[in-house]
Image (cartoon, rainbow, N blue to C red):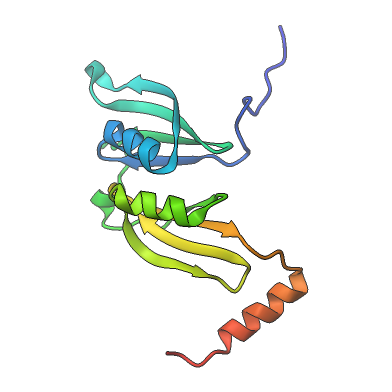
Length: 159
């Protein structure tokens, strides 16, 4: 018997798993807004909904499933009234992706700006309640430069 690798090919050590109220619609949205490629879709009980799916965004796999209530409950942000997780995307052109996501139905949670840590950065909330931050690195900084920039930022008078 051959040894099975603990990490499947094409996966990273940490993989996000999103629970939504309409996984089919979410998969289409993520394809259109973020360029996601669907890798796998398993139908739910009786062929209804999505029990489990996997999509690739850039070099990362993200799993998506429909909300389930019962002994193996998994709740969507809409059911909980909030999310405590933000998924972050590093991309070559954050302005284009940000505007495409908003045009596709995301709500702006934080407008794009040039952040003190060297990224052009912004956040959106998708139609399924998940928050996505996204950025493009515009300035490489050493840890010392980053520390000084953070101190300067934190010591600004409140507006």
